[in-house]
Length: 316
Image 1 (spheres, rainbow, N blue to C red):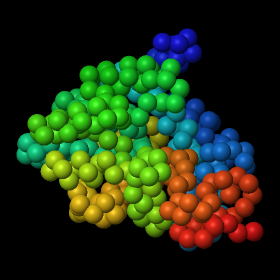
Image 2: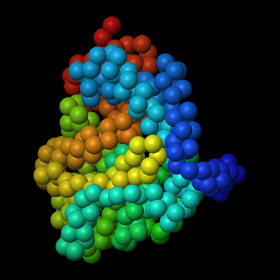
Image 3: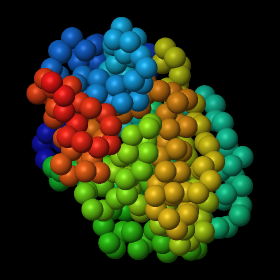
Image 4: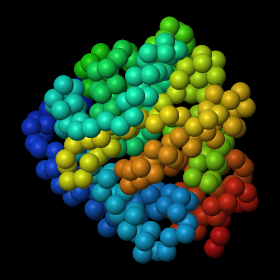
């Protein structure tokens, strides 16, 4: 483990002694400057996303929502001290309630296999612990670009010994085997795949390049699909686990239909805790028309994106 990765690990461990409300206060102090810096990447991306998702808002209402989202971005950073820094068993004490557990228990009892779709919403690392504490699970992950950080991710997420599976050929094959045996798999459903490896489908009204892996696995294995996330409660009071059934059609052989259902499931989760979604992510960077401009690039260059699905996507 590189020295800076090791330093990060021990910093998280040290900060883990702080109460969650104090960590959130620090997170707010980190998130607010992202709003003050007009050209900060996180602010620009969030503003573009709010114009896509809520075009009906006026400038004042949109600005207020962007500020809330950026503060939650700060919370997502500092809460890692309370989750990874404390370790799984202590972190799980922060879970105050859970909704929809009956869906989870029924899926386990069915023996058909279970796919948990966990969007980038709330504290997905705490959700990992919650799931791992209840059943053996395999978690699919994409290795970070800087491979030095992978050791920290594997160590932090492995406290309750889930099977951590790289998103590559051998790893994906192991997921099929686990589900065929009635096991449980966790997948982040809202990561943008590479061009040519996904399916464009509506997400908050605008087509987004959507992963096909989850619908294909669901269709081929017959496994149950549930959506889940760990919602931050107000003022650092802890977390609420939420579990929702997947929309109809998520295992449809028609990938457009299946990916539309997948995105609808993410939307249903996001609408329960809207500012807590990872709105700094460039979810609509890939466009169906290769000649259509990336809206985030346009915004960074002072141009107003056209949020339709056709044309150049640029206005003066």
